[in-house]
Length: 239
Image (cartoon, rainbow, N blue to C red; front, side):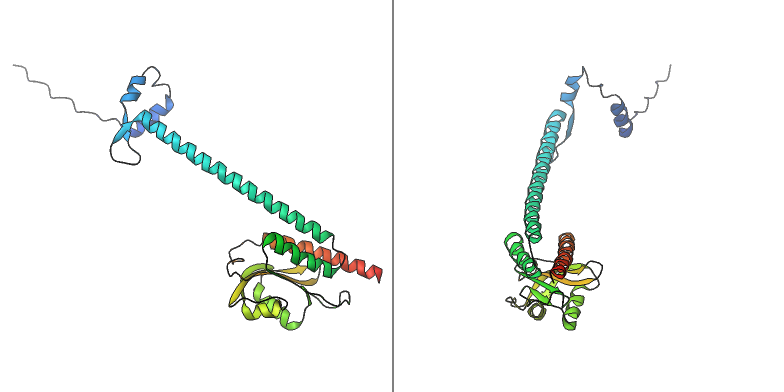
């Protein structure tokens, strides 16, 4: 009497090898559409299973929504950049039209207030550049004021930081100080040699928060510094 053969051990395919094989044979399901409809996969949000086609539709819908959100974000960023460019353009053109240092300071104050919601501006310059009577927001530097600016900058060329009430009163004597402290963006004006400081301030403590980038402040300081040199040279020629 012959002995019955033992059943062969059941083999299980390695999922990674199956996935690799299917990736190399993307046409496997061509002509096997019925198999696609029979496949079940986990539901992405609830317990249970759905067909592969339903899952594909769900994933495609999510991808479409994500792409739509990214597109809207890009459009919003483009609109913001366009508005920022137009404001900056108007500011620079107004500064270029200034015929004196005092006119430059007034253009800075007006343009930054109207277009960038900057509540206070001060232009502290080395004394004796043109001998004129100074008009706010232009002021003449002295030793205590240099020390105050050095403390604000803390070794940086430009910086956004908190502006205590007493420092506000010192550096912005022509404006109303905040109840406690405000915030500011400050930059050192230097074109070959120190020219002074430009200070933009807000009574809102978080308006010029420390984490803000100083690219705009640096750029504005470079423009103002070069205009100061040009205006000073023009005044010397007239004198």
